[in-house]
Image (tube, rainbow, N blue to C red; front, top):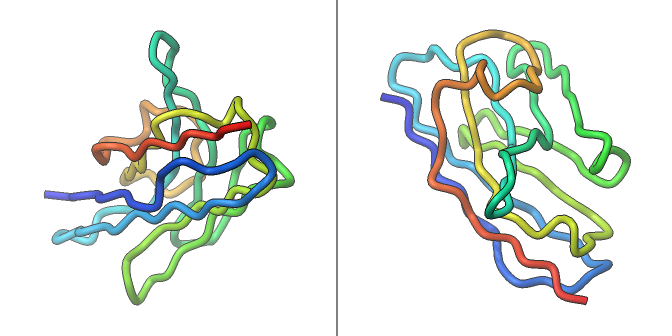
Length: 124
């Protein structure tokens, strides 16, 4: 059973940076893609960033492109999302996701496993 645990959320000021972490337990070794999605109450979950773990290919949503970086630490089986120049529209619950299809997908349907989420609140 794949388990994902996010951390690093909190209350931050606009214009600052934040790094989220996602620790993964993957007993069967079948995870080939991981990503981050976010959701605001009353709205649909939206794609933020994803990484093909084998090739290192990445994808970013237009809303975070250029100010966000998704990275991995294979030794710690941890995925990171660093976001710079945060603004109020980045306020959301951020979810880590994992799937078995080797590609940096933007569609949540390709991710079978999800973490519980971590709240990020950006204050002005």
